[in-house]
Image 1: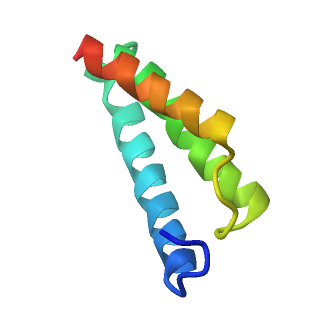
Image 2 (image 1 turned 30 degrees about the vertical axis):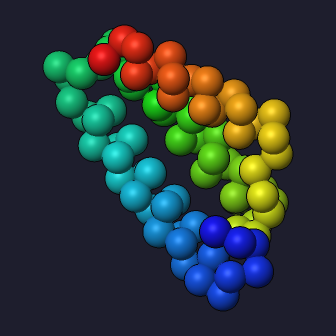
Image 3 (image 1 turned 120 degrees about the vertical axis):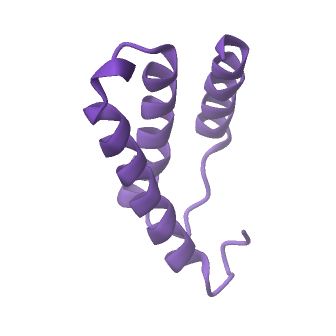
Length: 80
C-alpha cells in the first residue's frame, strides 16, 4: 500500500491483530513446537509487527529488513 493511502493505518492494525492471533494459536499447539516454520515465521512476523509498533503504520519497511524477511520466507518454503 502507498503510505499516503487513508486505509494504511487500519490495514496495519489488522495485520498486527492477525499476526498476533496466528503466533498465539500455533505456539499453543504442542504437536507443532520445534517445527521449522515456527522458527522462521515467528521472527519474521515479529520483525514486521515490531517495526510498525516502533515507527508507526505509515513507516515503510527498510530495504534491509524487508530483504531479510523475504529471505526467511524463501528458506521456509524450501523446507515445506
